[in-house]
Amino acid sequence: MNLLAFDTGTERMSIAVSRTIDGASHTWQHEATGGALASTGLIPSILDLLQQAQLPLASLNAICFGAGPGSFTGLRTACSVAQGLAFGANVPVLPMDSLQAVAQEALLCEPTLPGRGVVTALLDARMNELYAATYALDAGRWSTLQERCLIAPDTLADYLTGLEPLAQGLGHWCVAGNVFDECAAALQGVVGAGTPFGCITALPTARALLLLAPAALQRGEAVDAAQALPRYVRDKVAQTTQERVAAKAAPVPGV
Image: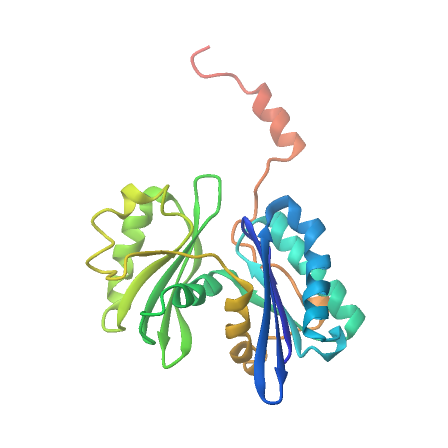
C-alpha cells in the first residue's frame, strides 16, 4: 500500500511516506518545527519525501492527515494541503483521529507495552484545557472507550478515576500525550496504581497515522477531497469584534 501521511496539529510537523516494493513496505519520514512554520514547510517537505520514495502522487492509495483535535491553524493547514494534493492527483483523503495517533505513538515509544491494554491520550488544548480520549487495544485493533472531549487540568484525576470501570479487565493502562509538566500535580496519586507504565510523552505522528490507516481504509473512512474536514472539539477560540467591544465597555466590579 502506498500512503502519504502528515500531522501539523501540534508543535511538531510530522510527515511520512509508505511505499510497497516487491511485497515489502518501506517508509520515509521527516519531522520539523510545526506551528506557524508548518504552512511554509509542509508542501516542500512532502514533495521531497515523495521524491526520495520515487512515488508519484497519483500512485498513492490515500493521503492521510491528522484531522484533530489540535491547533486550529495547524489542522486547517493539514486539511487544505491534503485537499489540494488529492484534487490534483485524484486520490482519496483519509482524515484521522489525532488523539488515536497519540495512543498508537505511545506503543511505538514504549516497545515493551503489550498488545492489549488501554491508552488515555491527552493533548494540550491551550486556554487552560486538555483534549482527552481513551482507547482500548486488543489483538491489534483499537476501539474507543471514551470519545474525545475537553477537560480542565484540575479535573484530570477525576476524569481518569471515572474511566476505571471501563478499563477494568482490559489489560495495562497508560496515559500518553504532551501535558505532563502542567498536569503533574493532578496526576499524583492516580498514575502508578491504575497506570503501571506511568506517563508516556507522545505526539500524533505521521508514522502512527500510517499504522492506523489500513484499518481505517478497510472501514471505508476515506473521502473525496471536497469532503475532508478537520475535527474540532472546541467550537470557539476567540471573541468576535462585537464581544471584545462589549467586554471593554462592561463596568469593572467594585468601581
